[in-house]
Amino acid sequence: MTLPQQEEHLHTTSRSRRRQANHQMNSQAPHQAVPAGVQPVNVATVGQSEKVGVHEVKRLLNGKIKAIQRMIPKGVQLTAEGLIHNALLQMELARDNRIKQCTPKSILYSVMAAASVGLDLMGDQAYLIPMEKTRWDKEQGVYVSDYYYSTLWPDYKGLCTVAARFGWFLDSQIVRADDQIAIDVGANTVQHPVGFGPRGDLVGVYCAVRQIATGKIFHIEHMNRQEIDAMRKDTDPWRYHYNRMAMKCPARRAFKWVPKDRHDARMIDTIENRNDENKELDEQMLGQGVELV
Image (cartoon, rainbow, N blue to C red; front, side, top):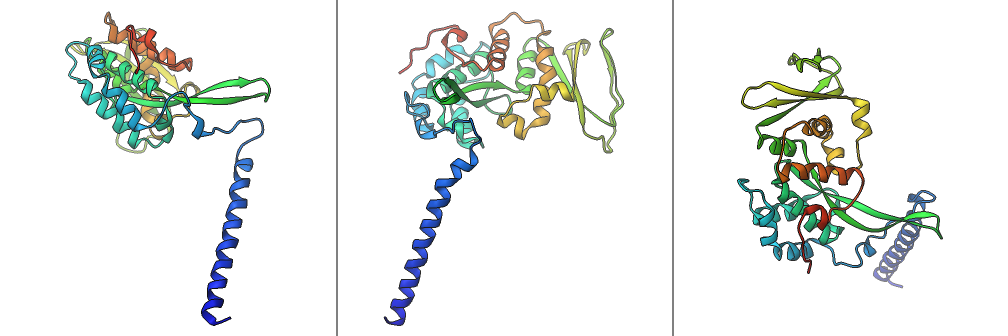
C-alpha cells in the first residue's frame, strides 16, 4: 500500500469511528436527559391535525384580515395588516422556537384577541406565548404532549395602554432592599424617595391607580417578592424580562379597579383568566364567529 493509500485508509477509518461514536451518543442522550416518569415531546408530531410554521400562519392570517380589522376598537390607531406583520415578526425572532410549532388556529385567536383589546404585538404591549397541551395517559401513567398552542400575554405596558383610554394611569414601581417607602392604603398615599446610588435587590412592587387629569391616586396594590414569584411561569417574558413581569403582577390587580365599561377593557380580564387556568383562547371568548379555513 502506497503512502497516499495509507493516509486515505486512516482518514476513512477515523471518519467511521467518529460516526459510530456520534451514533452511540445520540442514541443514549434522550434516555439520559429525560427524567423518569416524563414523556419526551416529539416535535415532529406536534399539531398533527394542522400544518404548522410561519408560512402556514401567514396564509391563515392574511385570509382573515377583514375579520381582524373589525375587532379593533374604534379610535385605536391599529391596523390588521400591521398586527399580522408584527405577529409574524415576533414568531420569527422569538427565542423560544416552540412558537413556530403552535397551531395556526391558536395564533389566529391570539392575534384576534390582541385586536379586540387594541394592543399591538410590538413595543412590549403584548406577546405570543407558546403553551403545551398535555393529557394523562392511563396506560403509561404519565402526561403526554398532544400539541403546542399560542396564547396572548398582555404586558404591563399593554395594561397601561388600555387603562389610559379611560383616563387612568397604572403607576407601577419596583421597591428594592435599600429603599425607604411608606404606603398608606387607607388614605391612598405613597412616599417612595429614590436616589441614584445602589438600591439592592427587588423586594416588592406596588401599583398606584392614578387619574390622569388630576394625578390623584384612586387605589394602591402592593406585592412582596414571594407573592410575585408565586405567579411566575416558565415563559420567555419571565425568563428574559423578570422586572417588567414583576411590575405587571400588582398592575393586574390594580387594573380591576380602573372604571371601565367597554369590551376591550373587559376582554383583558378574560384573557388573563384564561392564561391563569391554562385554557386556550377560542371563538366563544372572542364574542364572534370565526370560520377557519
